[in-house]
Length: 199
Image (cartoon, rainbow, N blue to C red):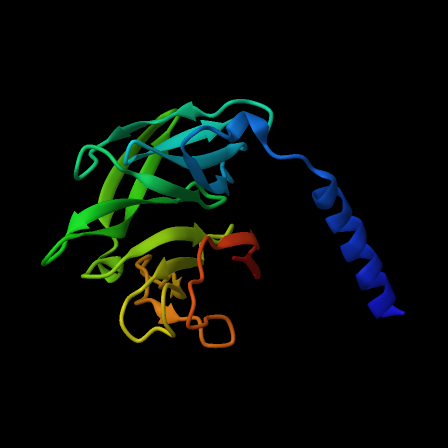
């Protein structure tokens, strides 16, 4: 009986998702990606790439056109994306840092006040001569999942998990394992709840 109830609840939950139309107000001629809920204040954050530059936008709801956010202290003056926020308002975004040979995406602490995002220092464990992007912080702020092609992965971009330490710092990224990661690319993680991740 329990299994029947769970299946019915799941079908009832997924049915409205299947019936939805594209989010017309959010789509542009550019590349629109990395929609994350604004867990602190409601609405959504999303990223947009046009003309080779990425930018952050904020939408009140799915019917309203997203408005651009002002970025302060960007390391290269532009190309900030993938903003994620916990229930408590702890925020992270992605910007590029110069590596040994080229620039690589890294996760930075971010501070959101109204329509302004101030970029803080990068998380040292996400920096290096590899790509690290698409951070997703759990609603309670205890875990973060990132996408990276750092060494020791299964191939392509994989999901890596960071845990919040007692002193408030983040652990080194731990590979999410081959039950989740494959030789192909895993990307765009999204926490539905503290214990449920979509990607």
